[in-house]
Image (cartoon, rainbow, N blue to C red; front, side, top):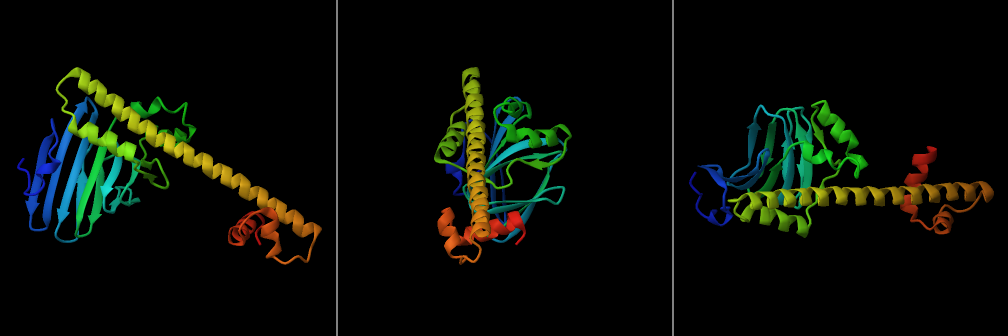
Length: 249
């Protein structure tokens, strides 16, 4: 339970301190239980050499990973890889908690939020992209919510900080913590929905430009390739691969 030297600033109120000090470095886990089935783990690692750590447990788990410092690679129990860069997040479901994490000699800070599946189910009607992920969860299949990790915003960092540093010694504070947890999950889902909307808009624009380029070629065969992108309002280096994707050449 001791706090490693130099890591006392990472102590959190109401948290349960766990630590390890070995020749390879220091590990500090201030863990906090917000309420039944919802908990957070704030992890600080200071490694003096490259190392891999294996985490294992029998219970299925739904967890949100926020990587606050440095880059980490996770290898799941189904041999699936998940890489997170500093300032990225993802939501992961494991039917059995078994993960190997690879670290380089450096300092790392992560915040992991463990929460029940029911917390996501309420969002399914508003965020249809959750459908496949929730289907995997119902079949207890390992799954990752985002194909491309999301970006941890300043607002998300602020909520995480308040969750960690507000002492939980009353029912009101626990209810406040739950509201904040729902808020951070809502922000994450909103970010993904906005990204999907932008991708769809871009895809529609790209498809329209390709179709217009095809019409120009059919109507005025013999044009220079360099003339066509200008007429459809798109960069040549984006139009060429898109045209090949749709028409095979």
